Amino acid sequence: MLNKAIGRMSEIDPSRYFQNLPENFINLTYGEPIMPVFPHIQDAISAAIASQTYTLPPLRGIAGLREKAAERLTQLNGINCDAENILITNGCHEALGLTCSALLEPGDEVIVFKPDWPMYQSMAEYFGCKVVYVIPDYQKGLSYDLSNFSALFTDKTKAVFLNTPQNPSGVVFPEADIRNIVETCQQQQVYLIADEVYEKLAFEIPHFSAGAAEETPELVFTLHSFSKGYALSGLRVGFLCAAKAVINKIANLKTDLSFSTNVISQKAALAALHTPQDVIDGMVQDYRDKRDQLMQCFDDLGIYYIKPQGAFFVLADFSQFGDDETGQRELLEQTGILTFPGSFYGTEPGYLRFSYSATSEDVAAAIESLRTNL
Image 1 (cartoon, rainbow, N blue to C red):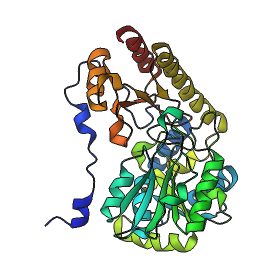
Image 2 (cartoon, helix red, strand yellow; image 1 turned 60 degrees about the vertical axis):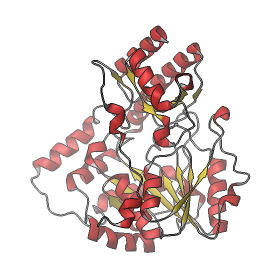
Image 3 (cartoon, rainbow, N blue to C red; image 1 turned 30 degrees about the vertical axis):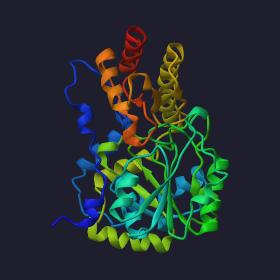
Image 4 (cartoon, one colour; image 1 turned 45 degrees about the vertical axis):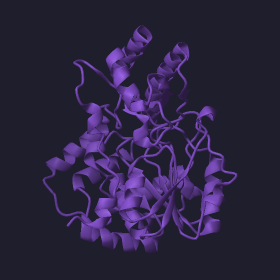
């Protein structure tokens, strides 16, 4: 008989959005970078393979990688930590799953900011938790009124999920809001799970890490990934930063589930952490340029959208076509552009998610098709 916990999980299957596609459609659904891996990371992968040494890496991750990750979090993100606060994981997915396993129990409540990555709801339901949503104002750029944030907490609230820069909107939470959220969590003695996988991709508003608002990371669990900022999605490597005592317990759970993370991926990740800042700046500028081109197109066509301040997505209102799933198909038929319905991420009706992680050629082709056919 199917385990009740598995049966509670939301179904996360976007495959229906990719059926009956026309020839030569323009794909703006990407949730990952499609750019080539940086040359110095490719060199590190080649060297790791050529070494012909594939011994099992340490459970918590290669020492040098954990040390460099902690150094980066301390120097660039302002999080007070060292290597003992770091656990290398199989992507951010495993970091999230391990964190939820350590914290959540049936009957707990978790708070999530809508729109959101559907994995949060799925994880919460798997552990028998109730999800309480913070609803934004779409007409004010997807802003959140935190004046009554504390009213959402009950004696059953166990954790808050915070994703910034946010998927699917590209919204970047201002430092003041994050400090407000962390302070409320401290007052309520509730954990904050900070998903920062897009942290390198922030434009006008600088990224601020929730863990930097605590002197020591006691209540904040910081989740990072090498998939978005370094174009290493397929290597499946990320890391978790948390209190040392918690990392010790989570490491024991990781032993049972997956043990260590792929050694080649870890060596690639270590090279990624040595990426020169000008290389990162060039990548960010490329995303910003494509974002600006899409926004200009929407402005010219009178299409309302949420201005993304980070990541590589923009939510645009196509409610003139009806609900978002209908709109997705209608837009595809009229323009040949494939997008994601916003409802997959819990948006208001009618929004579509455009990804500008696509090539410059595809973004240009999409803009030309929008201008010609709408």
